[in-house]
Image (cartoon, rainbow, N blue to C red; front, top):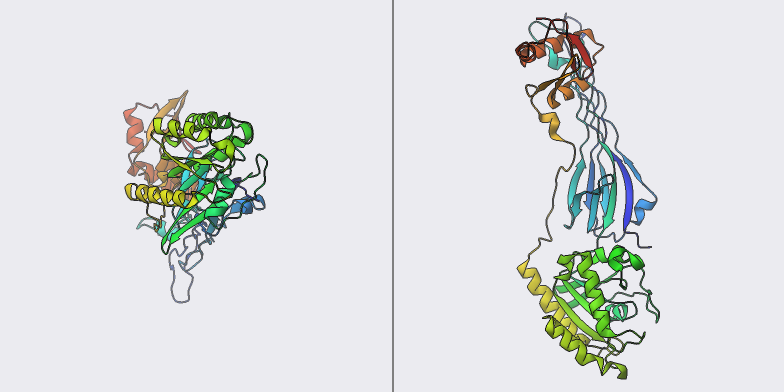
Length: 430
């Protein structure tokens, strides 16, 4: 079964907590703090697997949750980092935010590996908080939480050439003739219900990929006949081969077919309609095609498009079509080179607020409460145990160092006013 859409839940691992430990060894009195740092939570990667062709696997597994990092240990030993999760997807997969629909990653390079959700960093043990005046700190940091979200996976086939046209015009037959693909072929509309890919071999080291897109009909850009589901599969192609039933065997006018399909392409995407296009009159071996071929040729010439006559059933003109397709694909690749050996690693999500300096904050008044906002401060407070008296003393000293008290004084905050920093509230005193 061809599956080209899926929705999955992702959760990177939380960082392990730092711990409070002290060195307890014989003959070493007052050994000092020895709490180790927590391990990093597991990250989530997306990796292109060129052996995959659908998103079928995600019908059976929809949740990917990475493990949490291990807490620190005594003797300043770090907790163990959690293993990362690699999610394999087919080449051409887009990863979208399920809430907004925004494209976050486009997996278009072979062997591409993208760091999507970073695991939370481990908390620092009490060793890091020792100072000359605080030689035995009894507090440590908690691990940073991971990130969770739902994402939509959407597969858009990567092909050099896209075959488009009405149902039953011979696209599947043509693909079976020019490649090793074996699409289902029968003499009724909508035989092809899923896109088919075929590799056309020219000579050693020379080949290109052709996608047989299921038949389009009028209104396809609005989803009629599953049109939008199929149209997006030709968005990445370099060349469109527009196959037309020149004999009008289904009772339609070939010239009108040509106009309708191109209008659907234009309504769906102006860029798609502007792609180079070869107009192919198929079934030219049938007597009914004789009157229509000159009309199609004239129309293609008026629009500056190449025109070829073939019969996919008898293979008349097929060799010339393949050669012309190859020539145009090669020219288009040279004009718009795409590296096919690129390995990409990118951090897409997890806001870098964790790198914001503590000194970057602002104070806003909400009724009688003065609220301190700052990404760096919020990150720090989330990682401290605010029920620990020593942690509160540490914060009080820190607020003085970063200029918070001075900033409150500059705002003429009255004595006894409530100041809120994250979940921490205190009364302001000069």
